[in-house]
Length: 102
Image 1 (cartoon, rainbow, N blue to C red):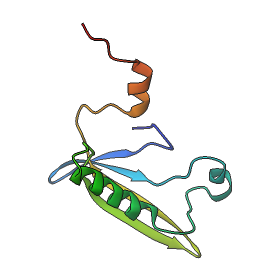
Image 2: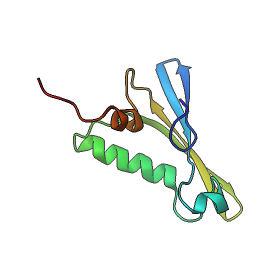
Image 3: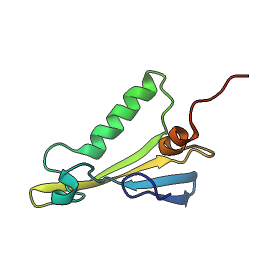
């Protein structure tokens, strides 16, 4: 699962497969801070947004856990989501082009 900002790892757990993803920065700040953040708690915020989307009926993967670890004034984090079998990444979906109706 090597896509996006560094990919993710698929693991087998007692209740099924899950994906562990390390939070990484994009854009110009990634060269300066790497995988570190300063304010907020990005993994927790992402989990909350995903659960709000799920409650509103948006099909999002089930978030199982969010971790935040501190390093001085900075923090980093990881997320674990239930793996969706047969899912397509956004990059794959965009490269496939628009669906055609017959």
